[in-house]
Amino acid sequence: MTLLDILAILLGLSALFGTLNHHLLRLPHTIGLVVIALIASGTIVLLDWFEPGWGLGDTVRRVLNGIDFYDVLMEGFLSALLFAGAVHVDLSEIARRKWAIALMATVGVVISTFIVGGSIWGVALLIGLELPFIWALVFGALISPTDPVAVLAILKRVHIPPLLQAKIAGESLFNDGVGVVVFTIVLAIATGGSGHGLEGDFGVDEVIILFLAEAVGGIVLGLAAGLVTFFMMRSLDEHMLEVIITLALVTGVYAVALHLHVSGPIAVVVAGLLIGNHGAQFAMSENTRRHVFDFWELTDEILNSILFLLIGLEVLVIGITWQSGWLAALAIPIVLVARWIAVGLPIGLLRLRETYTDGAIQILTWGGLRGGISVALALSLPATSPYKSAILAATYAVVVFSIIVQGLTMERVVRRVLREVSEPELEAGQPEPEEEIEVPIAPTEPTAVDDGGEGRG
Figure (tube, rainbow, N blue to C red):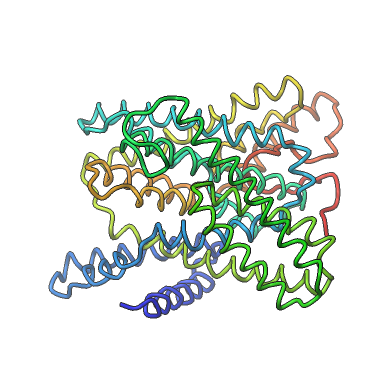
């Protein structure tokens, strides 16, 4: 099957399922695509059960197996999706919350990795599933970072104040980049080296060097590429050419990052923040700004549609035993509890110098969506690993629950938490807060509370 055939099938199904969702389910577009794709996958399984001679399931699996989900997302879609999200984030708001974002995106991910890994390892022992501790940590690393693609795809359908959206998106973007670095390190340990200069046994110092090389190298590369692009765009006023320049930036910086073994996601996010803020203000005319932002908004919508469709269809290629099924079911509450602890501890430290609303931890916990990045990382595990199928099943369960259940109920949870927090204050005679809930550091459901200012135009 050619690339054109695969693209035609995916775009065709995205259009068909999107239309069905619009007329029948009326769910947010990305969630609706996942739900209908899951229904289609279940229908194929049932048809295989009753009419095995048709071979429908085998045909669909051959098509899906011909699509390398990891390559499609991590080395294809991800750079464009991250850039499309980053250009809409207010850099001034991120700068004001830089220490909070940094703490949540680093310490929070590490805490969650060890809590999830240790818990999954213990559960695996109880159900008689052989899963070494280091491979349990691999699962913890790939499932701990929240997914900016899932977060932004869902939140953009709901009206929220611009500054609050900047806070939510900013943490999610950096959280994702750091999470991929942590996964790379843990997988390198599990496999005895992964081509990043770590071969055989290595210690803490090598791990720290790898982390700094990936993360700091990504920041430096993103700044350098963003500055070059900034000066190129400032020297002309041709909107079509400038759109092409941004597209070249996205693909070029990610490709260079892969070759240099630095974090591609972090590099793209940094470049996107630079172009979306200083670039839009000082290097683009109003006409260019409109075309550039419209192009990346449309690109984001198309790629998200294909990505969430694939998430719903990938269930057909996941082999599930009763043991991996139990592990998958138990992974959902484990990940939620780990998220609650990973959010609660950093916020507890930050409260020594900043003020946070009492309901922030609950909102941040439920708003920690996982998505296609976790699935892609799970699929990238070595095919020779005997633990891949169990990890993949657990990953898929958490991601589907996150997108459908958490995604659909996020607004309700936020409203309830804010109401529970505000009612005691009103009963005590305290005035209502004039600003929105102080949640600058994690993806949460938008609220109708005033954000205290206007967003950047």
